[in-house]
Length: 580
Ligand code: COA
Image (cartoon, rainbow, N blue to C red):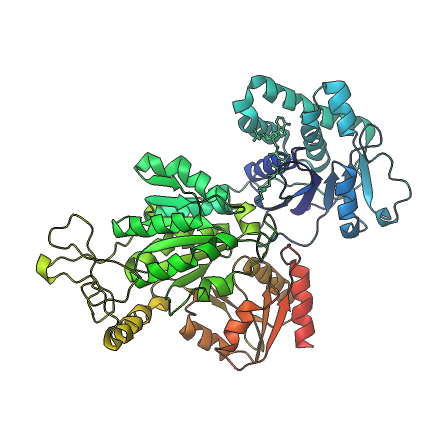
């Protein structure tokens, strides 16, 4: 039996059947066993019903992406089986709710199951008839998974106790019993026919397991966020849950407003009052905020907006993955509205770029948009335990001279003006959406508009060096460079590692700062390659289009837009195709 240390388990069923709980519990048990985990979940927009899926990748190595397909599929109902038949490969394992009592029954005559290793598990039947509680069928399944693949049972039960503890000891005991029932069923009815195994790691890792949205909330607090306003929207709402739980402990304020326009307006007001404010939203919300984003740009308000992208346009695919807000984030709005746009690659970067967004906002006095996405917002990942003391917060430049010398929009050498907050004697000033003179009084003369627009853009001239704005991974002799943004980067890294292992030469550029582009680093990268491959989860090839304004080198776009992220094998194949 091979000692597999990179295992992907997919659990599918109906929303309401406890798919999400199963995945959370299994992934946390794996993390407790010292494994690195990265999860992927997708569920319907409906509150109950519809196909829900949770996939857990567990490995002794750092996990870079969701991976290719899965090795083990656990299906709770027929819909989940049907949805996954096309993905099942010979050698995969299928655990299904059957042969009796569930809605799957026998598997006879399903051609896609040729070569698939199957283990029956009548989870519905056992839950209803033996345990008397249908809801616990998911834990019967987790017991079977633990027995088949050596997931440490004590870890699994420990997580169950924590997760269901608030529902009462009775529920915990019931679910422990369900786990034991799954274990016993496998022992009595099956012998191991597959090579897959979870190999716990002895290595002590100072890791936490955290979801992307929670990581943004944590990063915001590390960055100094003390005011958060939002209108709930999938898939961004969990950022608000996180800050609502933690921000008030440090005298921060969390405000749920009546819509997204109000939330960004509140953020601008809080910024004026001296707070380090943030809002979290998704594409439709960002679209509503755009007019006020222009106001933030005009009044040079330090503020942070996190856009957890989802499939669009309009209400689109609320719970599905897409990275198609790049144009909106970089160019949305009327007039020349300066802003900074960052994109996080993984959950760890969600923490640190969210924190960094506050320093950038404060230093440059500008709206900063942090792009995340549905897949990363929902997924959990093991990351090194963040050490807030390693982060040095920056505060905006304050006026320190005589009150009569204060000018909010003073022209300075670095184009950054001093600020004052209400209550600073003699520093009362006006902030409106109108173009203004140095003191803030409306002035639409050509001189001020010209100078102010230049100021609002030129203050960003050195932003590329303000933080680690990009990463370059050049391979000697490579003629092809791959560039992408956001969570697709993890998949690109894994694909590039695999391609290189097969002798393919390829380089990678990862912009964390996507607007304005880190041109020094990008040009240095472009000097080393002849052509580019730009994979993106959007139809238009938004990053590719932006890059075409920066280089004349040939760009091959690789776009998918089915509501799912890339798989590394697809990018490996594309790299080879471009090079051939
Ligand atoms: N014993 C006791 N309780 C259990 C259990 C068990 N064995 N297994 C699950 N549960 C509980 C969970 O704790 C959870 O309870 P809670 O609501 O008190 O937290 C509940 O059952 C649901 O289970 P869960 O595993 O969290 O979810 P699910 O996989 O059954 O899927 C949703 C349901 C929630 C994912 C899904 O239907 C959903 O979120 N829909 C909304 C989508 C959305 O955001 N739409 C908006 C679009 S704009």
